[in-house]
Length: 247
Image (cartoon, rainbow, N blue to C red; front, side, top):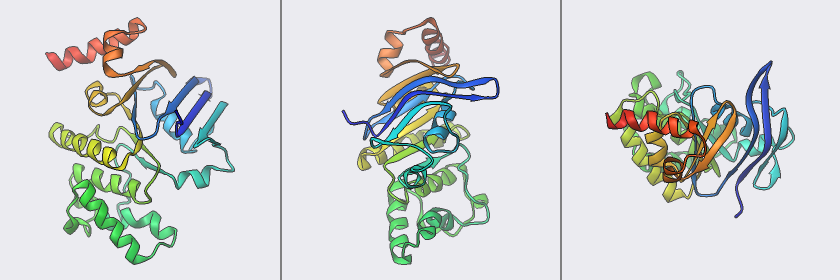
């Protein structure tokens, strides 16, 4: 095993509040790992720590065996794609402008950028005739496809997804689930997905990591967590969500 990302004893506090406590986590290559748990349990904090938006108070992190630090984070960020819940698109840029932004900042040629965007449109099923539209002119599902294209523009080794489908209606969400799984399989993409939705985790995740109060409580496949809960909280979490799905 040669994980792409490793977290060792990671802790983060915000004033007196514990956001993440003594977390050990490995992200295996070409696998979708899902962080799941109730609001405020530390899921999104872990993504922000990996991409260097905040610094850990304790512990060590590694990307492709190299330490993640203030000296290395700029180069690491170019190897990571990041999609947040509302997409984070710049409203003054068209879809094309949003997708191309990072590549143009790195002085990629116009021909190269155009060809890559055409590839990504085909990959994400985004109509090329909508590339000149602004985010306000696109549907929620279309905006999330643009956000995904932007994250994939530089062919990242790691894709971080922070509840990217939470605000979408069920049919759009189901279509994006299908397409994301196909895309990740085709690209052999390493993904860390944050969600609070157990059904989403079950559809997409190879490994599910359940958190509570900043700690990892149990990790494994969906079946392992459902059938062999390590604590009463795990059983309660599954029963609450599965009961809602069955009712």
